Image (cartoon, rainbow, N blue to C red; front, side, top):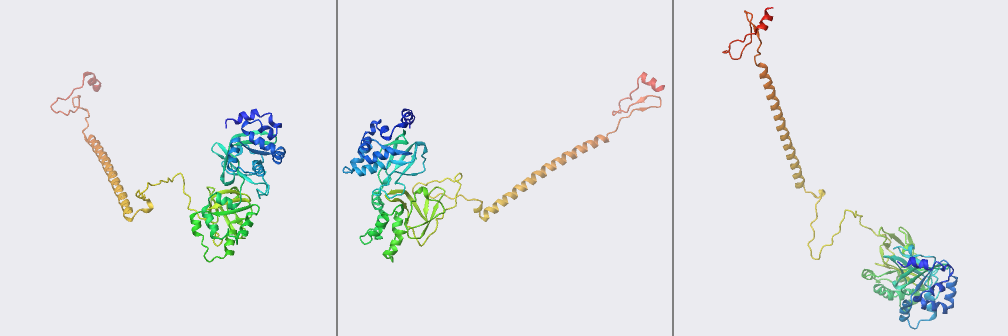
Length: 421
């Protein structure tokens, strides 16, 4: 959003300018400005608006929208542009990757039957912000945070679609499995049409729509009369608004059938009603919202889902094998060792201990042998004869000689003199 900072500076003096005055300064919004000036109720609404966020579709967006409905009435155009006026200030930075279902100024009963105005979904997608309207149509913000008196303007690249009734939404979303379930349950026949019509006119309704091959296969009407089938239909309707952001783990909802359904939200944010999982959340409809499920709710089996034990993501690697590749050989752990394997380990430990003892005995023997040799050597030196000088009869000091052939040594004159003395 490189242009946001420039727009804030350029519109610094726009605090006293109305929505119409601000829009007239953008050439790509000329068609929008023209409609506002020619539709008095819309003009009055925008002039009096306060604490709002207005989503302004470009000229190209309006042209593309009109091309899909060339005979569209002014009342529908007015209602559609009213749907673009959001309640409250929602600057670009306030959006996250979590859905935000925002109420709008569209409360005309001809187009909406939702308390506090029809909703539009806004969330951060990548580095941008997108708004989702009927049948999951997305409109991207191209210019954000244009300041006006009382609120903000975001310029978007496509026109929002006003949500339609449930049956129209089911067909537009191509929920083929759910359409088959409705047909099998006789919910759209002439005889039962008034019954279903009642729920289409009910304010603030939440519909649970099972749409999967498994759901269709499990929907068996054998043995059911129409009253029982209608009760099953009512078990898929909640009299209140339950957007994906409203579900709380561990709570219970009382359906239109008066039978409870259990709500479970797992660690990844997946939502379960009993054991049925919401696979496509928040389809906006004229009188509320539709949550698409992967299976049919069974009022005779009200249980919560069971999840496998959690594994550490830091130590677990998931490898997807190539097609037709042989299954990997499981690695054995200490718990999987056979008796033979355990015996082999014990034998190995014993052999290692014996070798260690032999090595220790060898070094001890060598040490003792060395000590004994040293002791014997000292003993031999002590047994040698000591040479002591002796005084002869004639007064001569004689020193014994090892060599007997050598004559006795004589003491010199000074020593002899001392001895004589």
